[in-house]
Amino acid sequence: MGHVILVIQGSFDTPTVFVALALLCILGVILFKGLELAEERMLPWHASQRGKPAAESTPSTQPDKQLRLLADAKR
Image (cartoon, rainbow, N blue to C red):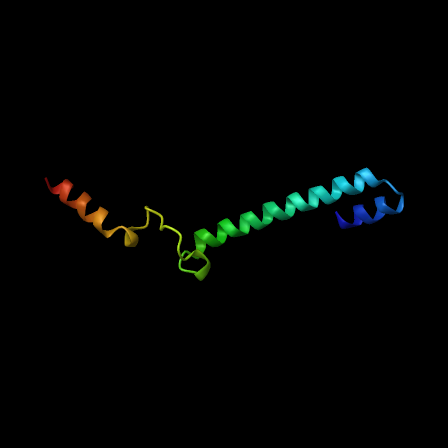
């Protein structure tokens, strides 16, 4: 993408340069959000995840809910 910008800039094709820059920006945001999501799922104990509510599917974060489900199952 960078090569395309340099070549097109040399030929003074300004609209195409702006389109290439916009695509680079969009790609950067998508990659950033993807890495942020991967970090959130793979490193739930990390400092960047503190203060966020824990996922309800994690057994260790919902012991009361498990106990209630076990009690209901025994009835």
